[in-house]
Image 1 (cartoon, one colour):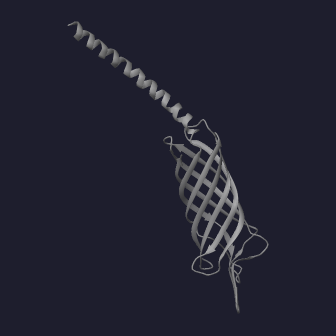
Image 2: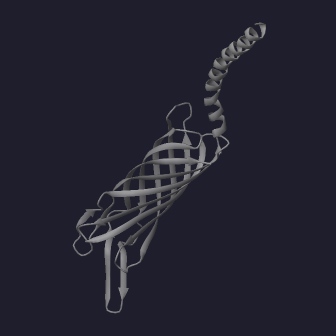
Image 3: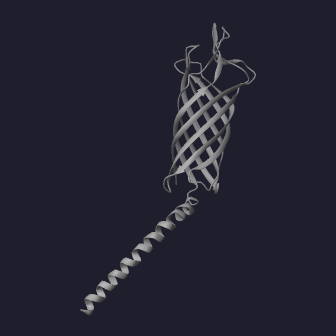
Length: 217
């Protein structure tokens, strides 16, 4: 009888201890995850969105027209060198067209810059920016491509789901320098010379909204 009572007593004590231990674990887990975030300095983001803007002139007619707004895709690689501050490499690409000129165009950006996060929020806001190059190329026409300097600024939100994954939403603006020459995507050959597009103004501006997933490792 004593053995039975003692067995039930130990079981009861164990049951009484399990609850507080689990509760303590749940309380400690968020801080443990937050602390381990700093041990994962590398990140990669894959995003899809929509980009609009970009005004050009049609050579010969002088008409001005914007590129069609179309779906865009972006990939970023980041290195967090201190909590909240990271270097970031961005590549963003869009397949679009300029209806007034009847030209299908690809516009791509490759930028190196930084990202600053404002910690202390469940959904973390951030600002970002970069400098690099814009590549403009025409599809199905053998006129080569144009490479111009550009810069970008962005603001966004990051929502951590686990230690390794987070949702990311971002709005970014791009400015591409037009340069001194007016022609763009030009061809020159024996007895033939033409330009598919011409710059409208000194800069080309585009705006982009993106959303996707960030992976930390």
